[in-house]
Length: 472
Image (cartoon, rainbow, N blue to C red):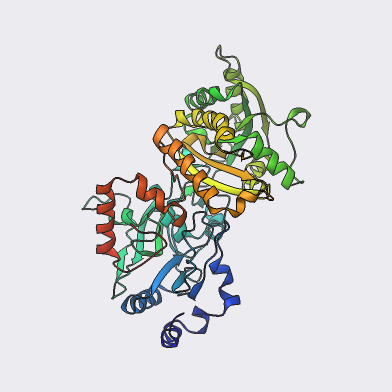
């Protein structure tokens, strides 16, 4: 699949640990988190920016395509090779250095291969954290390439908002290293070039190091499960919570009954908090938090939350039907179990959509009616970040359904869902998973021609060689 001289040359650049060629060693890098699987010509594992540059330069000079891979937790086939066996995987898993904390600046310079959990573990004693909360445990480079958001986007924003600087290796014949690693928060001396590499799926260049903004870690939090009086009242409830709580509100997550039931069925240790064990039609996880320790005479956050909910309960428009204030670790355990629960309930076809906040619930209501008419026996198990307009629109088909073996079935289903989301509701077909092979056709369909031309031009300027799983 690739000439032996190339393997020998890459081994000389990276050492025995830095290049994998045996099928057993490469299997984990060839298999994605959501059913996708390809064949790699090799897996390159550079341990520094210099090694990354050397590998990229060699591959570009010899016409070898590379697919950058971070934690391989993506869901749109953006981090795995195709099935040709002619693409090399460039893994970030050894790029875990440096780790340079600037406590005064509230920033850290870190290797792009460092996992999110390891980053926050290293920061635990400092009182700071990187405020992107995810169910998965990705590496930083992949988070930057996909511009992840997470459950606390409402308060802290996405990766784009929290990235100060980057070090990039371009896919050109020199393997050019682009130093954009400034740790300044304000710098208006020209184009903010780092933004070009955030959220573009690694196609314009490979992130090897990053400078990230840190936030004071929450010292107090309170959580509740809210049952709106109807799905139509979710938007009213969100605005009421924001009006009453301001910056205290750090999460407002929506969970459907099907998604919750799947999690409760899959994780026996989860406690069902609902009266009589009956899961409501739709539930909101609300969290409020403070980054300061409790002060004498200060109202506890549990009491603040209960007081606000009592006020909302008494409103004339009655947006709230019920509420359960409970321990944060128990309530978040339910939210974080949704993905695995849904995944194990059947064959999963997942969508990551975003809308104007007021359009999420009308979209879900529309799909609840229309889905059985267009695709029978497909279960909607939705959940997501209502506070920022994002929804994980998960569709589940029974594991023994013969349609699973028909590639046209999933293609038709995806085309229909995206047409409704984008054309009828003005939404996005990718909220925070960026673009992989699964979304290529929809990028081509829904991106205006002039924008595609500009993107292709930028790709030619930055990384003219084949890099990544998509084509801009």
